[in-house]
Length: 499
Image (cartoon, rainbow, N blue to C red; front, side, top):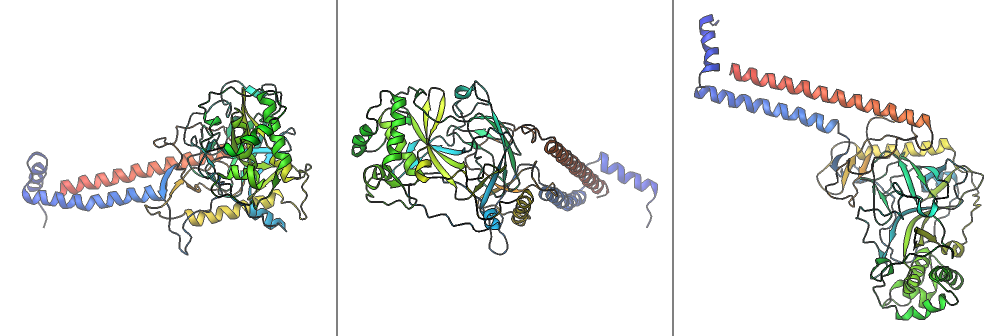
């Protein structure tokens, strides 16, 4: 049946100028119920299928039983317990499977032994050492020189390295102090324990460029810092009466604090034996006291903690640093390989110009700088393939929906990697639980553009190209959202008017 113009006009007039009748209200309500789920479902579709940078999601339950990323990390506490021997490596493939990251020096004066600090421990706990500063974002100049004078190394030339990760790694960057500049895919914060932390974990293919001034090795001509007795770097919160005689013997003949620190290092190196499977004889004692007084055997953690304790008993501020010692490589090779199991601990002395290394476990362990494996070292192409394989593993874990439970996964935009076929899908990353609460992305230090520190125009060009693609993709995604929102709004209005 066709309506006359008069009746149509009256109906339209009633909808605009007159209150709705009860049937009209019912029709409007039904129209709203029909339109709202459609509108909401479209928003959900674009929200979850095109995640924003830095979008947080919970851990995914993976078919087949694998539920989370496998992430390499160093301990957050020193337990001073026996360490099992490192499995032997017989082939290039085994070597790559154990590899955590590769260091590419961009300058010839990078030292043969490169200390890469991850974190430090200043507090003697009941059964070892830990840190009370790992969550405090208030960096002091002895750790970082992003601003300020160069302290110790004002006369030294800065060095630049590029670190490329082959595995998922914790959200704390191994780095050579003292930091000047950092380039990479994530923003970062500087913490009082000497660590550089990211909002989320490091993914395979991530590259970080680091400019640094080499941290000095402690010597008798370096002045020790004057600290108040209440300083945490002088604290000994347990009964040390059993080692006071040792602390006096270790500094016999030394005239000042600097000579005492050097003498303590020599005493530990001379009178103690390196042993990964360190024995425990007195469980009632603190492990470092047991090491100094009874067993006289231990690994790098024991040596470092022993130096720190004896230094503190002599009024010298000290702490234990933990990370990696990249030294086992042929001098003729252009890369430093850092495999899993090569973690290391050493003592750091607080001087009037910053932290200095006092590592006695190197000689005790008899590390070989001119390490020469019986198999060919991996080529650049083999490293690339290894990274691509790890990225594929991550993709299987990081795709799809995530449940609202367990550890949180973060999607961060990936800005630099070694793979040729990198796409706009960000790698899954586990959130850093030490990242300050309420410190959203954009609150940390902004990294340098990849390639800018290493003077690599190809890497910079690649980064800018990826960024341009991302911006274009984001613009297209926002345009689609606006169009669909407008369509739903129009449909909603039409339903109201025709209802």
